[in-house]
Amino acid sequence: MLDDKVNLLSLFTVVLFSLANFDSKEKKATFNFVTSKYSDKYGNEIPAKSPIGMFQEQLIPNDLGFVVKKGREYYHGE
Image 1 (tube, rainbow, N blue to C red):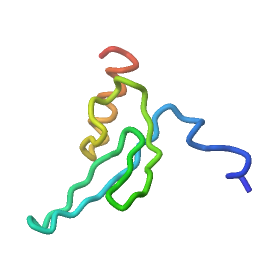
Image 2: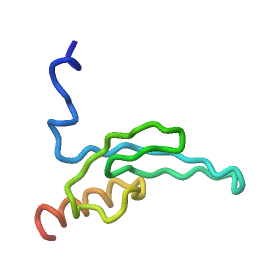
Image 3: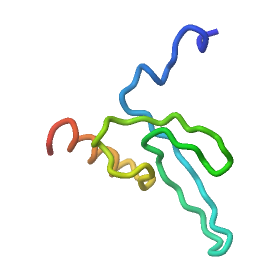
Image 4: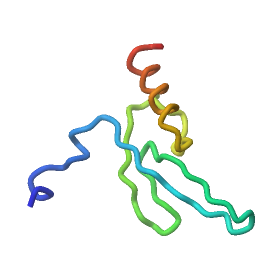
């Protein structure tokens, strides 16, 4: 019922989603955060968002320290 009345994503300025990929050749998983609207290789749309200029890339390392650093730089000029 809540989904019919409120779009929770619209209440936040930054919404990041995690994305895991597996490289079958190297037998290794990679983990990233998605910073803007993204369609994965299966056609699923990921509704991530962030202010223009906060992140340079659509996929960033899965590192909350990096996210906090970029947020401080964007909002406080640190």
